[in-house]
Image (cartoon, rainbow, N blue to C red; front, side, top):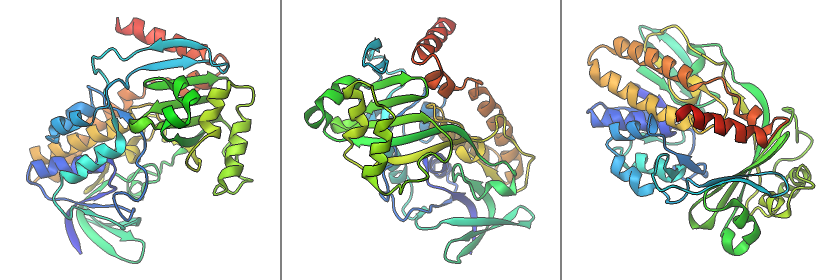
Length: 377
């Protein structure tokens, strides 16, 4: 099978690219490993930035649809220490400067805006082989293959497309995150819900922290962040929810009960994530017929920028292809130079996990935020 524009990965970046191409009348096919759109929970709240995420959605013709997804009041945040003492409490000022939307709903909006059949579910890419002349063969689990004249790797941290462009591999950054959900928080988990407040909570101490968001329907979405070696919890069966929860709760011994409850009272099995990043300034020489976007190109520790950058990548790549009809290489060269510069600018060099989990946490985060406010004043 031969296809023109092939996108590997149906995350926000890949879908945004497909939508912008569709707006410009350019067909594309998206191949996704997951069996369906609802195969797994698609993350929590995502703050859409006015300098990259919002313009990307405007380029996709979805600004109005995006605005309908915004959860009001969620830009509030507070910082606590381990005792539950509130050190900073900022209400939502109502300006909507960085509106929060459910990531899953945003992804579904993008899916709904594509022609039926654009996304081919259940296609897990296992490798890519260069055929010459800008053509590549993609192999999928189960033995299927396709040949494409333009391949875009939007397939995340462990991209199967990246090796044809770069030997770089993500490195572990020394932080493990355990994700939990408390459902109907105000009724079933009132103390924890009160601690989180109306928007986001950062409860921090050296080496460990709790980040929680209030989502729709009273759901509390929690990330326990721990500076630990990569093999932490390797002695446990990660499918044993009770054992994993008990081990994580023990890390917060001595914390305020309403904070420890964000882990102990989870209504869903805990999910362990080990955080990785690509080298800062990751780039490659131009290879005909293939490129990357999002985490496949510039994986970074979670800081609110990754999804926004991926959507901006998708929009810019789609616009470049539309602006260079009949000259794919000119489009890819223009896109990559722009993307490399944007990714480098977004990587300020600040290690937010050193700020949040360092020896002076949570005061280091307060100081970092104060410096940022002074710089923007």
